[in-house]
Image (tube, rainbow, N blue to C red):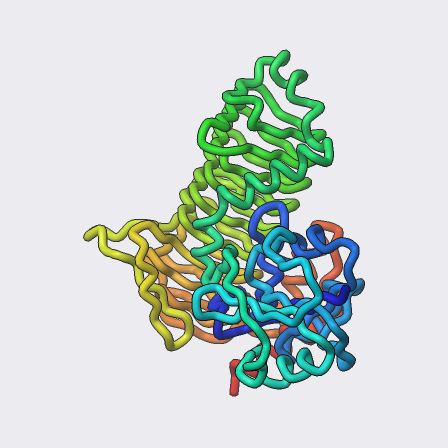
Length: 403
């Protein structure tokens, strides 16, 4: 079967990270939305539809998949920012459109109907003769929705890893060697290094520690929690209800945070109810507020649009390649655009645009050449190339925001 995974920007408000990623590339646990689809439909041919400006960089990140294909066949169309599984897909070959409440979130369509669906920007308005079905699905429209569902998605991870027989062989070894494991039947541990006086408490949810992780002494971890391959947890760290992506360096206190890959928050400081992109470096003492002094509900501004989140606890949203100086104080509901650099003694602005240099004296655009050079240096330290496709993407992004 052909699977067509698509972006619907009306149903996904993921700024600032959406400036550099397609909606299906966001991390929800050990998986991204797309990883979960690939795992669920492993025997299918998967195609991707993205915004024109993302086509080349998404193709580069997913060389095994076709992006924005011109030829459409019979197939299953899935909006990219939902957590799909086979149990919610009707088991027949009749054309059908899937709805979540009032939103079209996918369809099974024959070739001609699929072309109409694509031509109408993934709207079913011209497919009125096709039956519709409401399905119960986890649709994440905002980054804070992903944070809300951390526990559910990590629980799915635990079931998958347990079924695959992964990450379980080391539990008895750690228990014998004085590692404190609470509710150990809810903990999966891969081939990792765990130093003395580490506590893992899986009472409130599963803890999944992937391979090649290092957890240093006197650290306290509470489920639900996923720690990705190759990550390092600093001494005296406290983490709960969070997702740590691959090859991250994490220290201080984290509560209800998603951190994508290759991000550094090595030192002391608090992050709560936040979503942090890839290749971010947070200076020592960087902390965010996740609760207003008046206990009011948090509002978040994305570009020129303000959203009422209906949440009392909400932190910050930080795009890829952002850097903060030591002691940075991040206000409730802050949004820092990808590639921005923050150096401030006081609370920075809650809204810092893409590729912006922020100081107490105001904002200015970064030098794109210096930004590219810094990205090359940063990735080289991790043995990764910042190649010409990424470089051209950020140069194009810089030109777009200059207009």
